Image (tube, rainbow, N blue to C red; front, side, top):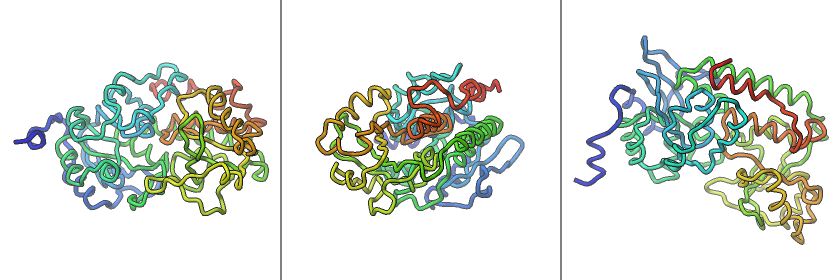
Length: 386
């Protein structure tokens, strides 16, 4: 009997939690199911005195007899949702630690995340790791595992039945052809994760704070005609020679701050496709010069400070014979482009940063000390002191 067969017959999940495994697994194989809730709600249904169910595509309805304590998340967006809901102690691992930026929590008094746990399990993507970690819920889109990491639907069913269910939906972009089921906004997904952990009060506090924050930002924005044309790209090297483009009209959560700020996409009206797993097209400096954006946002440098970014990436672009002709480069308006995966806490910081990058006259530049939201208020929600 090989190791895989042994693992299938001797699952290590804790038996104290019983889930609607067959129901959830069936939904995963079907690829879609009916939502219990209406558009914009958490899709949650109470099934008994202590049990409850949560609905999210592609898994459909997942039943819980107890509130999950241990959890793993594929990306920083879903991990950040759980942290925002006060669940830091239950983290068992993440699927992509390189894109989970925890340094933002350093600005929130009393909010901490155990980096040792993350570094011990930074790429939770195999069945063996799911068995080893014994999480109570997996904040993963299972079809992402199928399409990116060669899982089968049977593998998803196995882990759902033997370990714990999946609740998640790949929402950071909307350009993957295999994602043919419903998407969610950041706060729609956050609401569902809040129902998983039965943290409605924390979710509502975040939702109210977020609405007030975005409203306060938008009230200070200049008229639309005075907002810049922006080019968002990925290029992870310090000496960029080509650029992978993102279209800002993609409604994924990774571009939420730019939509909220009402900026203009420099690629609007062009036939340039959005970056995705199936599109890796790149633009060189000559292509960029034809577009000549007023602002360039470069993803792939979130471990750098604003100063470090300017001293490396911008400095190289300013010395490039063609790059130096770009309006954004001449004016020094080339900035870090924000995270690919963002949750509610990340989004507050990224929106504040974006407002300062794009509208320094209204909000102060990125070096100013003005804070556009109250760190203590956020920390109080996370720690339960609000």
